[in-house]
Length: 328
Image 1 (cartoon, rainbow, N blue to C red):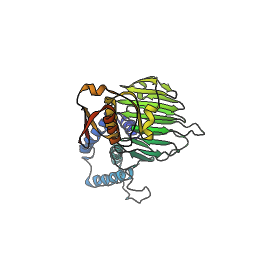
Image 2: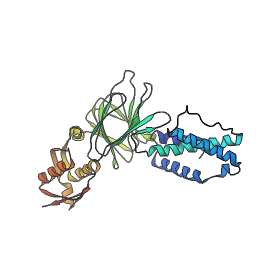
Image 3: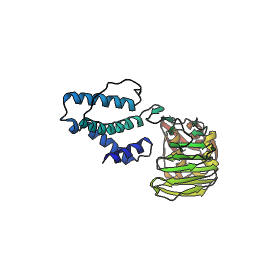
Image 4: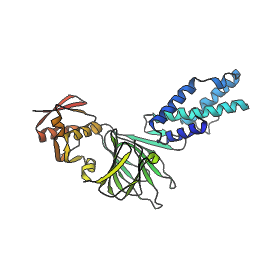
């Protein structure tokens, strides 16, 4: 891998667009580079120390621990040392990118901007106001990332893992707003309201107001345009859409769930994704029982109580994270 390819991978990593395999390549590259001392084996000891010192300062700057205005020791590099330093600084970018991506804090310092990362716990629901006054209601066990500052000339971008309801503000200059999901599905809007859900088993977008365009990374599927009341689903990088009752997909925003002949098995998946509960069934017949109506989703216990009463079944908590549905 040459320097240009490495630099491109780093850029994709920092923008949140790197695939799982590309992240693995970066990690392996860095691990190899840490133990490869070939470029500096023949350097005089004084130059090794100088290079080490300068590299240390560069890493601290990229991580935001040092200010550019801070006075640093001046080091005289010869031509060979410059070449080695240039190579190492690329590796520093890899190290900084890997480190920053795994920081637990909400604010992550990058070279260009500050990236906000907001997470919700299981069963938690919060409203986030974005830099342009657009809002996102995050469902439980969800996460979004976005730049703290958006300029008028840049695309407004948000990366989501989980579920969120977006209310996007339209701008005078028709600034694009794009939501990126974990599967590489990109939702492009101007001003609208829509729900995005992206979990391990696939992604879906429900439009309630306005119009959106959906694209897939690498153009593996044709663009899809949604009108209000349409639901787009993506599974194995294949996009499809259909007309649905939007309340069934957005009612969680108001702390309730609306069902229309929904199998209990699907309800078990909601309990797992949003509330962190592992649901098991005594037999397959229970999985196929269907629920229609509206129940409170303020807490997982509200949902479990409603299921037990509606179907006259036994709901047994094994521990804080597991329940079993069985016939009485």
